[in-house]
Structures are given as C-alpha cells and as structure tokens.
Image (cartoon, rainbow, N blue to C red; front, side):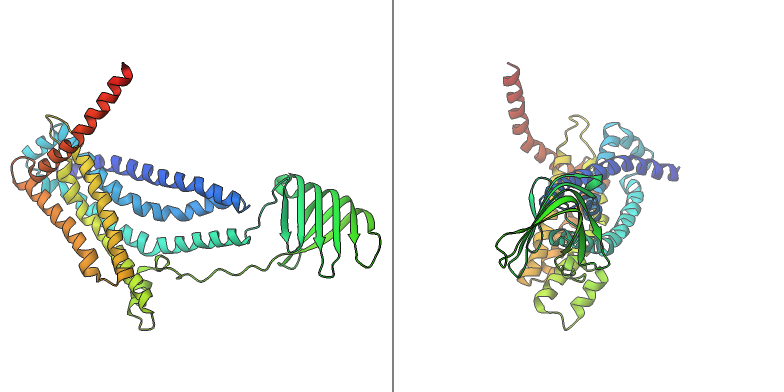
Length: 399
C-alpha cells in the first residue's frame, strides 16, 4: 500500500515535470537557434555548426529548466489531486502531507545529485566547447563558404567571385579572380569552372581553374600579358589562425573542484578570486535549492476547490523568477563588490527555506490551507483587475 502511494504520487508528478522541462528547453533552444543562424550566415560559416553550438547549449538550458520543471511538476500534481478530491481521500486514509512529500524528497535529492554533475562538471566543458566554436567561426578556422554572386576576399590581396556552385560548393562556375603581388603586379583571371583542392600544407589550398583566360599586368611591361588555358592552378595562402585559449578563461568554464582549488590558491588574483567565490557559492545554492522546492510547491498546489483559482500558480512562478534574479544579483555583489557570500547568497536561501517550512507546517498540521491560502487570496486580489480588463476588452471586441 505504501509503495503504491509513492508510485502514484511520483507518476502524477512525472508527467507535468517532463512536459515543463521539455517545453522550456525547446523554447530556449529555438530562440537561440534563430540568433545562431543569423550569426553563422553573417560570418559566412557552414550551416551544420549551428547544430553543434546548440548541442553545447543544452546543458546550460537544462540547468534553467530543471528547477522550473520540478517546481511546476509538484505544484500541478498536488493541484490536480486536490481538485479531484483524491488528496482528501489520501488524507482520510492516513497518508498526510509529510507522507506524500517523502518520495518527492527522494526525487529532489536525485535531481540535486544530477545537478552537481550538470552545473559542476558538464556545463563548464560544454560552455568552453561553445566558446571555441564561436572563436573558430569568427576567425574563419571552420572554413567559410563562398557567397555566390559576391566579391569575397579569400586571402590577403586576393579577391574572388563565383557565379554558381555545385556539389555542395565543391565545384565552382563562372569564376572571376583578382590578385595583387608585393612587386606591384596584378593578375586577373576568369574561368568557366573550377574547384578547391587540399595540399600537404595546412596553410595553403589549391584553386584549380578550367577553360579560362588570365591577364597579367606588370609595371615593367607596356602591355598586359594574356594567357588562355585549359587548366591553371593558383596557390592560395590561408591567413594564419590563432589557436583558441585554454579552458578556464572564465569562471563558468571551471568545474566545482577547479573553482575550489583556485579560491584556495594564493597565486589567484584578488579580482579572479572574488568571481570564483561568487560563482562557487551560486552553484552550491542552485544544487541545494532542489531540496527546498517540494516544501514550497506542494502546499501551494493545494487548491481552493470552491473557486479553483490559479493564484498560487502565478505566485509560485513569480517567487521562482524573483528568487533566480536575486541569486544572480547576490553573485554579482560577491564578484564585483567583494561582499561575503554568507551575507548575500545564503540569506536568500535561508528565506526560501523558511518560507517552505512555514508553508509546509501550516498546510500539514493546521486546519485549512494556512499561509498558502493567504497567498492564494492575495494573488487573486492582484489578478482580479486584470481579469476584468481582459473580459471588458473581449466584450468590446464581440460587440
């Protein structure tokens, strides 16, 4: 019987949790995908790098979506149980709120452990990989594609225009090329077709032209020299590309262990130590927040069945957003102003924990809905004018 109750509660929580995490992550990725496509097109890079960059962003967005999913999953599950009177039946059978919340604490502990791996280790490596792709794309190390119909500076003193491409860009048609040398010579070539070929040297590529004409302008000659060719090879010197920096240029690229070691290292500059300290405590806060969410979300999910009002949902989401913004502001205070994390970050966690204890105790051991009911009434009072405004607008549109 006890096992069935646990599984039933977990099953009711799992569905809204999974849907919320999936929708939140997809929306965030979709918004970033549009910006990445614009960025890659502007940098004239290959389109497939967008998917690689999005893959490296998944851990970051999961870190944002998991707390929201856990909070809404618990809140909506208890709201559904409350509105269907199943919660009343469970209470009458002796399964009170402490009993129902027990399996959720186990799940919250597992999510916190997963978050240790996510924000502590996976996110730093994925962020570094994303930054590396961004650097290579900006520097041209990924191999910029040739824009058809435009004059493209392919290398130093080399201008290229291609009328059309085939075979995914491997074959070029209607080619125009102009090159200037250090001796003042100017070479202009046109060709019906051509293509790029690799060489043994990574810093050079071979542009092979077919069926064209080459004109050489030399200051030492009165008239330019003209050459018609069936095949002509032109060596293109690629610009030397700097290598990307090592991982650890930002505090977000360091794992939890590396952050702790850097904080304790006497050689760490004071400015860096403050940034490392703020981010280290913020990550710990993010991990431990999962343990508090069931105590806040479950009482807020107990609905008023007479009105079925959704004020607690709005209040809960607002609380989560404000908590996230304040935690990031507290981290900045530590990093920039040198404030102690024990007076900025952890008091915020203590307030959330105290709110969770008050909500849980009032809902579990006192008659009525306690503090959660008060929050519901306040939220409803704030939302009522907005509902009236929407109703008036809808009525005016219908008329």
